[in-house]
Length: 447
Image (cartoon, rainbow, N blue to C red):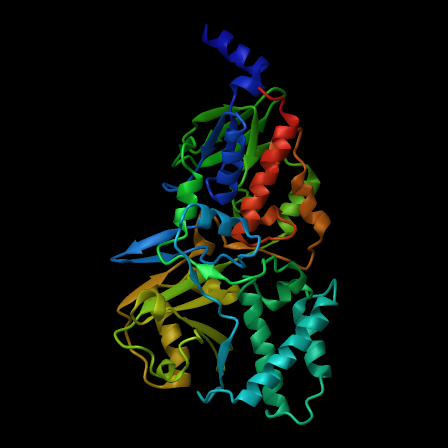
């Protein structure tokens, strides 16, 4: 009787078997929601004990800290902004493009120095956007050495150094990598919408909560194998439980695919494996720290300037002042590339000591111990192995487009790394999840 039932379901798989989505991050949830609203049976399998993926809001005492995604990057036309407005989710404008800059001796740049420095940055970025096929490292070295520094407020040697370190910083944040791994025309792949950038005082998880209502989500299911048969797809987890679906959408982070955490049978075709290997995916971490007293150098600055860049012999650092949001001295530092890898593999004490040392060199009196310290380690997380994708040296649109094509109309890929225009963003993952749902609906006959 049971065998007959299975055979009947397989013959009528598009009606009776669910579409299985692996990963309950925003791409998987968006895909599932659209499919379910179109009358399809959908089951999400999530390896973690929570949903949201790289959207993770931590409640600590009366505060909420977004450990993964924090910003809506541009609200004009952004679908995530639309969701917040429709569901009355509180947001706060948090633009940090107007920054303060501090010399290695701790002194603030003069207005003339800021103007000159930012003018050089804009010129370099314009030239980089016109450069292809080489690393940002080599391109920036060539551009910096060719610029005219006559009449500069800085010494030429010093200006070249801080410009280079600043671009090293850009590779780290927002691209989660190092200059030697980043494509020179990276600016063409930034993928933000226009308008204000906003954050969530009470957590980005609220977006996940409203989108995931009424979805069938199974937690703590760590998928290990995807077996593609003629009439169905079989999924096997780490406990040897299996799930049968008509189709499967793989929305796990690219880092998980690059680590071969999931085995495919038959093996993925070479061009899929090549895309997974060569799309950039990097580590990016956050360090929040609360102090007993505000940082003294911040007290002299205008409240509207919440982003500070400072230099020392290690490189360029950025610190964001979140005191206005938390109503107490809370600061955030963002680390990508090699510095992020250091955080992935270091203790809390080692990490705060690193931050303490860098700040002390510039600003003198810094508290030895924070009142609160919250650190992410996305690169060592077994369910992400990194934070988000970036345009690597081998990046092309065709490399990404490979993942847009289903395998035998049964295995689909989705996520921020599959987005051509908005890679590395929540809105990119959300839009791509919707696009894959539409693709499946175009294949599956309506009920």
